[in-house]
Figure 1 (cartoon, rainbow, N blue to C red):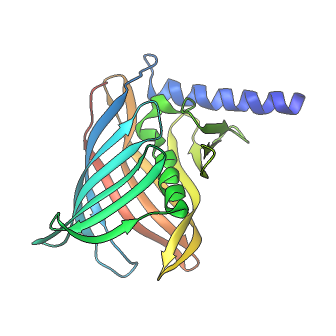
Figure 2 (figure 1 turned 180 degrees about the vertical axis):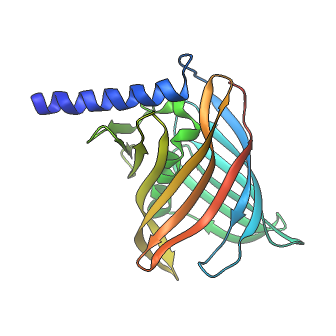
Length: 231
């Protein structure tokens, strides 16, 4: 009983620390947020970085999100990317010039990956931390917030690292990565920085995402928020 009480207390302490930092004036509860990003992506460790601009829509009371981006492989060759988790399923659609299909994602492994992305990006909607349906929240050590989504059809987990001030500094998971056509479970990590206040909410505005490969980290996405609602 004492061990269970200690675990519950650790979780309560972590959640309170996050909320005090992210919402110092008290709780904020929007139904949805929409913000814009700019940054760079690359498709392989030896590939050049290419620019993107994006709009991200995130529910305030569920895991649902939609990331809609334009990604330039060359100055006159834009690709449109829609990456989402909505109504319990993941979605990826990549089109050249906005109309010609290039790639799509589907299946349980893909759904798990989208769930893990949504969990790892919780610092951009701190008002949802600890309060999403189908998500189990645990803190094994008072500095890690372990999150597990389970809706009865698909289950996936990610860990958030919390510093002493209550900032979520990173999100990580064991996520499926395609090597050729073979799905391989690979450590994956996103790091956050550049905290700013927007109205009554404080969020990170810079992020970098990487696969942790045997030969070393492969950063493939780095971006910054260029507009965010004043909540």
